[in-house]
Image (cartoon, rainbow, N blue to C red; front, side, top):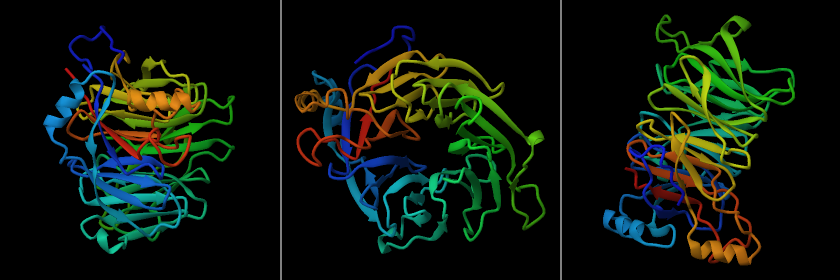
Length: 386
């Protein structure tokens, strides 16, 4: 465990106790907590979305495991509650609704997104479906204003906004770029006033940038009139922030900060009010796959394919700890197999909405599909922060 002395009031005190979910035979590149933190969803290469709970792993076991020497330890396994079936391709993105604890959206390589009420998901029937011929890169719910809207980013570099109550057609479509630039991820701002996309610009020179549009959620519109993105140069802005593609972004829960991760292996921490980068996390050497803020907006976590999850002060970017997801025993086995330093990262990470608990979708892991060195679909780390 690597720790910083620059912020003595807030440090990660020990390697975490890990809770493993989903077995090792299939890969998972996405995870999401529901609004209460009771359920954790994952999407897998086997075409299933799965729901887990980790509450049954006792605090006593976690405390004892955290105190053990020799790196992180496994305190228990997550309990799988159910598997959602219906997609015909791998599940590439799962997103719980920000306030409706039982509503889940899944997006798949089968070019569709589905909505589920997990209270009735045992019937294996989704409550709504979006078919997008171009394929889907990501889905994200609105966080502020009206939370009924869902942004769907397509592989045709178009962002479509749907009303979650009726998915037959989008309420708005934004052609982010028509010049060969690529859209990787799109989020609503927590204030509900903007739609923000992370892109790789074709010009100049493949730089990573944020493109922000003003968004009207329709709350003040006449009855029956949908919200819309106001398209036009006067209503959008571009903020260049990376020397490579901008792959991932996340707003802090209190809405004051924005973290972006790019192909330049950097994480930029932006002040939302001024839209200027205030700090940079520059400790990774491979492209940034995912970023996440803690529930209180004090921590920001960063993942890549490298071993460990970097956890930093969300204001200064100074490291508070490197959270290892692989036990020393597994690391030694991997080293003997010729995979040293690989398999201990994560494709996507998500902080729990109420605690210093970090879910990590482990992604592809080299080597045989099973065995003592293989990684689980999801690792959940309970951080000792103080």
